[in-house]
Amino acid sequence: MSLNSYKDLIVWQKGIELIREIYALTSQMRRSAISIPSNIDEGYKEM
Image 1 (cartoon, rainbow, N blue to C red):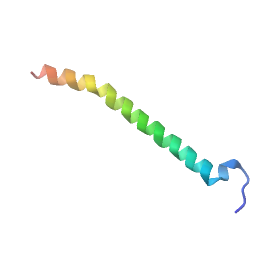
Image 2: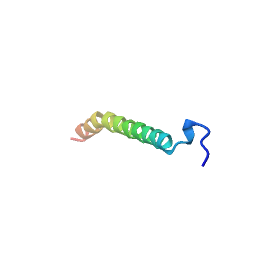
Image 3: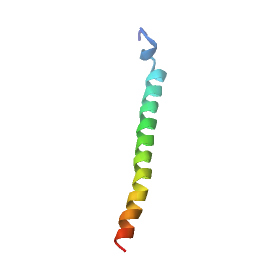
Protein backbone atom coordinates (compact mmCIF):
# COMPACT_ATOMS: atom_id res chain seq x y z
CA MET A 1 0.00 0.00 0.00
CA SER A 2 1.39 3.35 -1.02
CA LEU A 3 0.91 6.37 1.23
CA ASN A 4 0.80 9.66 -0.63
CA SER A 5 -0.59 11.73 2.20
CA TYR A 6 -1.30 11.61 5.91
CA LYS A 7 -4.96 11.36 4.86
CA ASP A 8 -4.20 7.86 3.60
CA LEU A 9 -3.39 6.73 7.15
CA ILE A 10 -6.15 4.65 8.72
CA VAL A 11 -5.51 6.27 12.09
CA TRP A 12 -6.14 9.72 10.57
CA GLN A 13 -9.33 8.50 8.87
CA LYS A 14 -10.57 6.98 12.14
CA GLY A 15 -9.81 10.25 13.92
CA ILE A 16 -11.93 12.18 11.43
CA GLU A 17 -14.72 9.61 11.82
CA LEU A 18 -14.59 10.06 15.61
CA ILE A 19 -14.79 13.84 15.28
CA ARG A 20 -17.90 13.54 13.09
CA GLU A 21 -19.56 11.15 15.55
CA ILE A 22 -18.80 13.43 18.51
CA TYR A 23 -20.18 16.50 16.73
CA ALA A 24 -23.34 14.59 15.76
CA LEU A 25 -23.79 13.41 19.35
CA THR A 26 -23.30 16.88 20.84
CA SER A 27 -25.73 18.31 18.31
CA GLN A 28 -28.31 15.71 19.35
CA MET A 29 -27.67 16.49 23.04
CA ARG A 30 -28.20 20.21 22.41
CA ARG A 31 -31.50 19.57 20.66
CA SER A 32 -32.63 17.30 23.49
CA ALA A 33 -31.67 19.86 26.13
CA ILE A 34 -33.51 22.62 24.29
CA SER A 35 -36.66 20.50 24.10
CA ILE A 36 -36.86 19.99 27.89
CA PRO A 37 -38.34 23.43 28.72
CA SER A 38 -40.70 23.17 25.74
CA ASN A 39 -41.98 19.81 26.95
CA ILE A 40 -42.46 21.16 30.49
CA ASP A 41 -44.36 24.15 29.10
CA GLU A 42 -46.56 21.93 26.97
CA GLY A 43 -47.30 19.58 29.87
CA TYR A 44 -48.06 22.47 32.21
CA LYS A 45 -50.57 23.94 29.76
CA GLU A 46 -52.47 20.65 29.73
CA MET A 47 -52.94 20.70 33.52
